[in-house]
Image 1: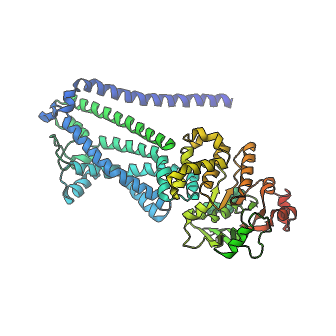
Image 2: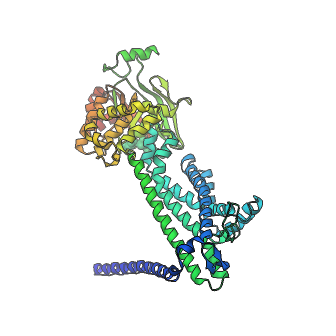
Image 3: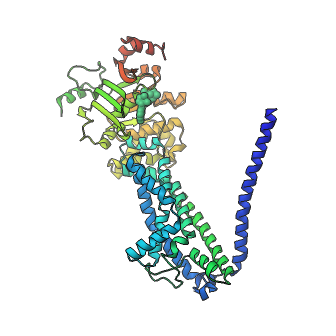
Amino acid sequence: MTRLRSAKIDRSVAVVCWVSAAAVCATFGCLLIEIIRAGYAEVSWEYLTSRPLDAGRAGGIGTVLVSTVLVLLVCLAVSIPVGVGAATWLSEFTTPGSRRARFVTGCVNLLASVPSIIFGLFGMVFFSQMLNLGISILSGGLTLACMVLPIVIQTTYSGLRSAAVELRLGAAALGLSRTSTLWYLLFPAATNGVVAGLLLSLGRAMAETAALLFTSGYATRMPESLLDSGRTLSVHIYDLAINVSGAESRAYASAFVLLILLLLVNLSTSMLAERWLRTRQTA
Amino acid sequence: MDPLVQLSESVSGSSGPVCEPGIAPMLETRELSVTYGSRRALSGVSLAVPRHQILAIVGPSGCGKSTFLNSLNRLTDLTPNCRVEGSIRVDNEEILNADCDPMTLRRRVGMVFQKPNPFPLSICRNLAIPLKEHGCAKSDMDSIIEEAISDVGLWDEVKDRLNAPALSLSGGQQQRLCIARALALRPEVMLFDEPCSALDPFSINVVEQLIASLRERVTIVIVTHNLAQARRIADQAAVFWQRDGVGTVIESGPATLVFGAPQDPEAAAYLSGHCC
Ligand SMILES: Nc1ncnc2c1ncn2[C@@H]1O[C@H](COP(=O)(O)OP(=O)(O)OP(=O)(O)O)[C@@H](O)[C@H]1O
Ligand SMILES: [Mg+2]
């Protein structure tokens, strides 16, 4: 009769898994529907292009979008080269398991577990005050870069490590230099990992408020340089929800825009990566 | 040029015994030993291969055949803690010296692995990248690629799809592509580590004949578990064995002697298939 019993267990396990999956979808669906329902009506071209008025109760989010994009660009421009470089060093230029490698990996893991509010405080003290960058888009972007750096490093590293040993041996046996091996073989093999890391980083950066409150600030006017303060979309949503009464629908509208942005970033990044990989393989 | 080398070139092609007095072999190891960390994998290996001959290496698993092969193009450099001691001479030049550049050495000493390992790129780029790395002019590239692919008998099969991914080829075709990739660099020595083990019987035959025919152009060291194959293609042979946990050579010399009248009793038993 054990077969009957194990069949029963199989069935219950299957049911539990199905229910969990359905619960996840339902939660996500509810969230989406709620945001669309409450925010969609407010979104218009006007809303997307004008600056906030009356603390965000009126006007739009044009300047906020500009600040958001600038902060993200600063963040990526710093975190990608540094992160990919560090991951490459860990994977290719040092012996895995050596003391140096363990030390750096430990630092990265530690960095990954630091709460974002701490990055915010650090950014305020280091970038804004010590480096005298003030409350600015630059300070905010650099702070975010520190925050997402561990993600970039970890995903790039595992991408590089996932390249088969045979590939490395084969390249070495043909007398390929380390740079050529990286460029022609390892980076393409790591692309999927790097893209995943990029998306995670972008997602985290776009969602971040705590690290930006003290570094890039709240200003709603159009930033004229990277040294100007500017609020990002998440900070805007936070501000509307916490500090401004009577702006709930506005907060929802901003959240709706944020979701759409995330979706667009997701799609375009993976499409670009795929196209790049294909040209790599055939050209 | 070294007079010894000139002399050996003038007799190249003749199949004499291993170390004819006065003739410098293309590849020679003396008292070679390899250790991984504190563990010795190979000790006291002295072998020589005359120009344009095939040395077949046989022996049970784990006795250091791959280790030996990897030390010949200094692929052992890639393994942390791996130390190679003794002497390895390629065309009379010591390659264990610090001033020997491993990248250049690996162009001269090509290698083909057990599992076909084409790059996940197009067929054409598989050859083009190493060629470019070693300074091949763009104008010569296409003709060298065509020649190398033709040399392995693959040209008619792939000439219409040079831009297709190399991984879309069959296992046997992939292995021949890997051979072409190494040949394109005009090596002097080719190392084969069980090149047929992962192939189907038909491909085994094709690759084996290809390797045998390459002896006109390069000196070859091949590790194989297939004794019949070793008998068919080898000019020289060596039997590796593990003694006290350390790999060493227990029998070596011209293939006819090693296979026909082995001196070492263990080698004799192994070659006649009565052990392992
Ligand atoms: N990277 C390494 N690190 C530590 N020990 C190793 C390493 N590579 C090989 N060895 C050891 O060296 C010995 C010889 O290994 P090797 O791979 O040369 O044997 P082989 O004769 O090629 O065996 P097979 O016929 O199975 O391929 C083995 O005992 C193995 O455990
Ligand atoms: Mg082996």
